Image (cartoon, rainbow, N blue to C red; front, side):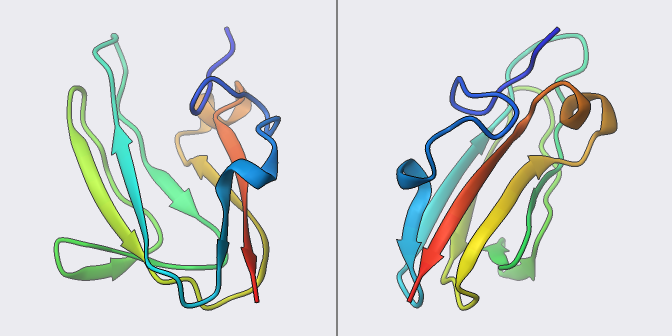
Amino acid sequence: MTLSINGYSYSSMPVRYLTMRKGERVRWYIMAGLNDFDFHTPHWHGNTVTVGGMRTDVVAVAPMQMVVADMVPDDVGVWLFHCHIAFHFENGMSVKYQVRP
């Protein structure tokens, strides 16, 4: 079984699709479908997001739930974004995002 983020697995999404600038306001829409085990814990390396007024780098998403996460990246580089559930990560649920100066 291969899992994906926006249809891409194992960080195969071209990083240009998720490229932003330092200080730019970025909104992430995270959602989970309705499968037997569709809980997710998306985790951003390198930067934090704000969800419900709280700054964090990981959120919990239940089946059929959507979370809106706002980011103002301050750390330049290429970073990993993935699901922290081991089975999901091991089966491809990861992409890279880039923050440019």
